[in-house]
Length: 192
Image 1: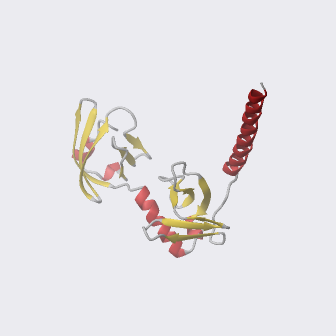
Image 2 (image 1 turned 30 degrees about the vertical axis):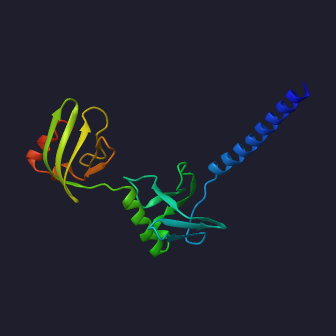
Image 3 (image 1 turned 90 degrees about the horizontal axis):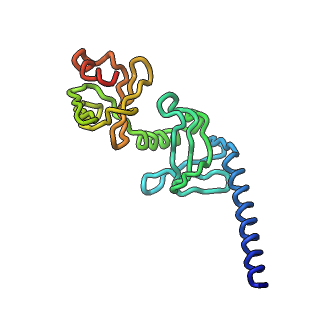
């Protein structure tokens, strides 16, 4: 009987310990930390990634995420740990407030994460069996991709700006629908 009571007490102790750790982690998550040129130092790793020294902590690699990728890519940039949890370390309020060399390093990481070719010409779009097969020219050359006909494959960001997402999650931008030729716009009638 004493053995069961001891196991029960051990379980209670473990639950209390986990509860305290959970409270601490929750407090850390709720705390807003702004990273500035004074309290954070970004550097490039040998592998081409970005490392961070923030206060007394050093992170061998960090992830750079935009909180407003389409509307405000230069402000409120989230810096996160590079593991599968991607726990936020802090926020850069304005990229322009960081030292120039660090700005360029962070912009480079943003371009890699948010690679989004601009569609300059629509050669063809065919609709078959609930999918649209696109043949386009982008700022990175000719490209073919597939989107679903239903859902949010093509989103209006403004009256003329479109965001196209293919079935693999790759994104393409049409900055001004009205700058495309008449025949190109006609091919996109399915989505407008």
